[in-house]
Structure formats: structure tokens, C-alpha cells
Length: 460
Image 1 (tube, one colour):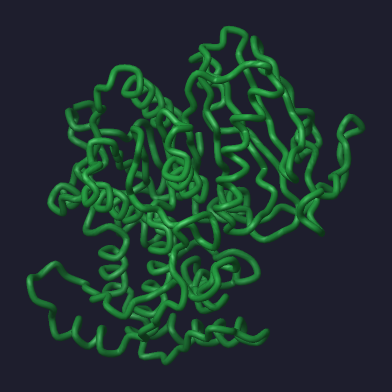
Image 2 (cartoon, rainbow, N blue to C red):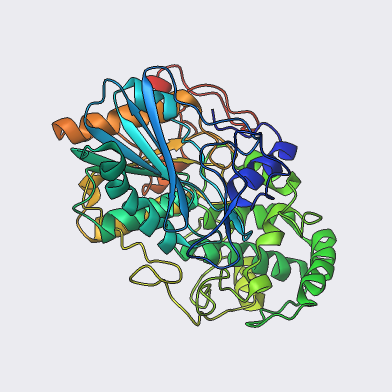
């Protein structure tokens, strides 16, 4: 399972998915030391034949493996002896800005092989929020697979978690003929909308606390400490009840379990070097000029955003005050239509896409699914997108049964053309229903607190 069990565990999970690892202190004798990249000056590529703990990467029973480095990216491929001719390309999540790249295994490795699917995964040649490089290196695996196995895959499924979900969504739009289907999960399906959300969380907290903040397009070396001190003034003055209501609406709308999600993420420390701050405050886009350290300018914008803490038809006096006082920020760069900067997700799926998201995820929020669903509907592609809500509070907090059921339903959809069921994520009343998320939740998700699911809802 991919699961966060407590606020303390959140950081460990995020470091594994989102923070660059230090190069291993020592590899086992059978492992090669990280090799200098041939394409990225200053980068090292960890030995794909070894895990980061120094243990060897070995084939599972009834399968054979291939590993190597190509184009500055490490890869792993595993093919079952009873191969069905189909391949899954897996895209990993964000790993910070360190200079050692490494490849690891997908969560569904065992299930892929059991179903007769081969899989391939890349380290990508770079770290950082470099979705374009992730797309290039992931798509290249299709040809690498043919070259090293001597066999061509009859069909390919693209899948990825978190930033890998962004990679997945862009890959199928940029290379529509390469894939038969896609399974992003906990994915950034709203491209730069994720940075708008990070902006929203921080500027509304500051406004509610009555603390003046800035958004420097070119922050200097001292700005991080300035922000730390400003957060120190925000926290004791913050009306958390109102801020929670605003965040709920900015992250997907009123829905079950949000109070537990709000408590969970506010108890979690942010990522280093701001681990002394509550989680969302360390993600303020102003800390890096809103560029995600890769875009040509600030990608976050809230000039036309109307912040709400209620669902009344007309804003309350308190909501008008919030919108009057909040810092407004203008973007200077947009999502890129190609593979540069932060690549744009158009919401035009050319193949069946089945996605999962935790409704309590406040890192990559549930609203990412709604953004993609709305774009797919606008382009007449709703029939090619299925979204499933899971009652968890963590990031990528899925049980093995949730992931395996989704994969099996996607492959059946591809084979038969029969679209599987999902959730009505654009229906506000459906999302707010106390049983929302029950249908596809399999097993316990520690930290998620909401009324119990009706006996019939989980399997209907």
C-alpha cells in the first residue's frame, strides 16, 4: 500500500516522493557507484541494478529484468515469462532539486506481472518539477523496451503518481498514438492550477490574520527568513475556522472528512528547509518567484479569484472583506503548450483515462480532478475520463485493492470499450454527500474521520 499513517509519517512519504535523496553513502559490492550523467552536467545517475539501500534489484519469480542508462536517465524493465504483449510505462513523482537521479519500482509491480503485463520506469535525466523531461524519458522507454527485449509491445498504458500524473496527462496528449490508455493517480491534472492553490492557501491566511505579505518575483537570499517571520505573525492571529472553510472550497468543495484533512495537514511539517513551518506555508509560491524553479516567470495568479467560505448565493460581508484584503498576484508566465517550463494539460484525453484521488489530500488537492474533468467536458471528451474519489487524507494514500481494482477496470475498458463507473466529481451536491468517496474506498485510511459509509455504498 501507499499510505501515510500519521502526520509524522507525512514528511517521510513526501521526502520519498518529493524530495531529492542524498546519494547513498555506500553501495553494496555488487552495485556500481553513481555515474556522471552524459547529458546533464553536474548530475549523477544511480545504478538502476541496485536499490538505494544497496540491495540488488532482482526479477520476481517468473519474470526477467533489463536495466541500463540511456540519455542520462536510468531505466528498469521487467517482463513476465507469460507476457501478454502489453506494457505499462510508469512515471514517478517529484524528487526535489538534488542532482542524483534514480529509478524505482511502481507500486503495482506485482500486479502488473500477475496480469501478464510488462512494465518500464525511468529516473528521468533531471530532478525538479521538470515534467517535460519526464515525458520525453518516459515515452522513450517504449523504444528502449523494443530494443532491449527484441519485442514490440502491442499496446502501452501510461501511468504515474503525483507529478507523474502530470507527466501522464501530458504524454497522452503529446503522443496520442503511442498509448492505449492511462491511469494517473494523486496527479497534478490541473498544471499551473496547483500553484494557484498554493497561492490561495497562503494569501488567504495572511488576509484573515491581518498580516501584510508580499510576492517578490525575484526573492533574494533573505526572503525565506522574512517569510518565516511573517508566518510567525500569521499563525497566532489566524481564524482557522474561516481559513478551513476557504481551503475546503479552493481544494474541491464541501466534502466528507475535510475537518480531519485540515487537522492532518496543519500538523504536518513542511519540506526542508522550511520544516519548522506547517505544511502549506512552506509551499508559498512567492518563495521561488512563482516559477516552480523551472518556468520562465510566475505561474500563479489570483486576480479574478473570488474567495468563499460559504456556499450562499451571494458573498457575506466577511467574504467581501477577505476579497478586499487579500494580496492579488498576476502571472507573468503560463503553462507551456509543449514540453518546456510547466507543460499545459489541455484536458483532451485521446484514450481512456481512469484516475484516483484522495478527497483529503491538501498537497495535490482533489480539485485537480475537477479541473481536468471540466476541461474534458468542455472539449467533448467526458466519456474518456473516469475519476474515483477515495476517503483518505494523505498524498497518494491508496490501498493495494484500490489501485489494482482501478487498473483492472481500466484494462477491461480498453479491451471491451465499456466505460467503468466513477464519481460525479463536478456535481457539488454529490461531492458534499456524507457518503462521497465510499464507493471506491477499499480498506482503512488512518487519519480520515467522517461518518461511516452506508453498508451498501462501498460496493454499489
